[in-house]
Image (cartoon, rainbow, N blue to C red; front, side):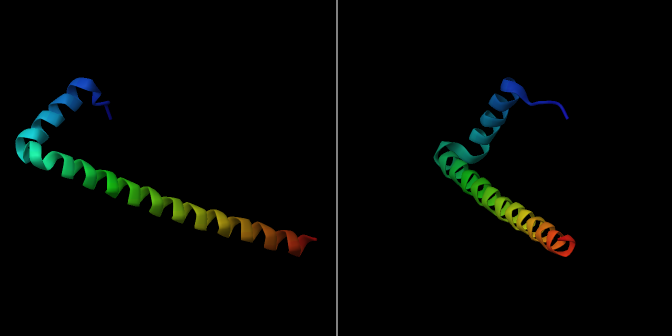
Amino acid sequence: MATIGIPGLVLILIIALVIFGPAKLPQLGRAVGQTLKEFKTSTKGIVDDVTDEFTFDEQEEGKKKG
């Protein structure tokens, strides 16, 4: 997939400005930021759970061998 680049980002910003208007654009940006933050927090929790599970499994295997 090709990168968007600066001209593409400017075009997207202009289209968003026309569609949503200047009053709604800050609210839209804030909502997108909060959504990304929640997604990042959720994925970090999932990764931590999986890592803990692998660590637990390795400890159990070590006890069986030793």
